[in-house]
Image 1 (cartoon, helix red, strand yellow):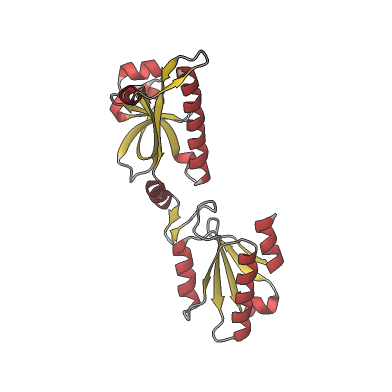
Image 2 (tube, rainbow, N blue to C red):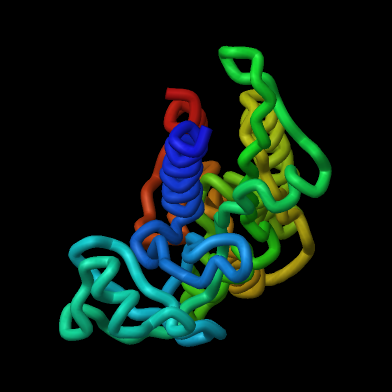
Length: 251
């Protein structure tokens, strides 16, 4: 029924909100009223505020909603209970959308179901879309700094960037190998940089890639029995033993 569809529609919208929060875009993403084209009066866009955006939206910060420029008229604002003085114009990137199709295609396809009385009813349809490549591009656009990317842990390609600074020291290389084995055995995805390159070059590449946690293994850390752990998002540095590192991921 139409009522059941609206309930499902709202559940889908709430799920979208959670998705964008998990990928680190939640604070900057707004459920946005836009044109529903020939299918409905409105569709729901999910727009992330960014200077690189191709769309213009008008944001109500208090209600956490926005209106697309294409439907930004006095009549529409009145219908939505919004006032122009409450809205702020911003550029944004569309990262998702939901729009009802009603029965337009089910009528053409004669797509029906039996209701509780056994009567045929047309299926009420909707479209739900999130563009993974567009979302990733938006994450890169918003969650980066002058050093490079800063991936949220939920979507980072690896959880740990293991930096080996052995300089020919086999003990350091062996220790890095043990750390790699233990972390991967615990289900932690690790990118191991064992290249013959300078420390500064490896650190710069690590910042550029933006993996959440960098673990440095060197002669110094081997002597101390604790490893340098650098968190990409905050820049915070801690020195932890391998059991302490593993516990943080498994607890």
